[in-house]
Image (cartoon, rainbow, N blue to C red; front, side, top):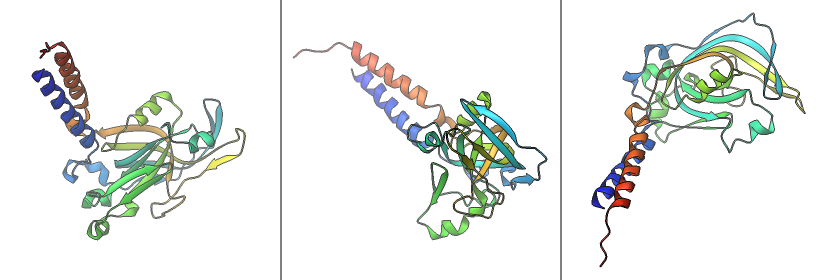
Length: 243
């Protein structure tokens, strides 16, 4: 029984550490140099087009060709159980929102020590430290609404985690549909706006994780679970003494 308890305790401790640390942001020295780049935005010649996801046909209107390199500090998956807005709007094209820091915040390390979170269509940044806030640039943070219609790309985007360093290439775009009602969402075309309408809506052509975050903590959950299971088996098979 003693060995089983030790194994289960060790597994539980490792699992807790894994869950707490798997999304810890990397230090500035661990960031790839590409993340110091400003997003690249150029006029596009692409014409509006239609794409179908599920039973919904969307019209996508490209506004600019766009590339961004950034560190994911928060994210929101539209498929999560508590997301009701996408369901109410019949919006299956916007699969995930990635909130990223880049350029100035990467170069200065100004992203370190702040708290980030995401809701439906919004990214929050908080700190109680006025010094940390002075070092942080809101223009070097963006909440990116990512549109994707290829299953392989959707899977890749939904596999991104907080702490990952990513490169996204696509087009800033408006999109709309007329499935039951008229729906339309736009995009920001500048990094200097804030508030409602300041998010970038990107029809994604390609996405890659340049460097995964989390270090060993991201995969250590599996050895932790294995230790718990092994400990339970040892405990269950151990002979019990009857007083």
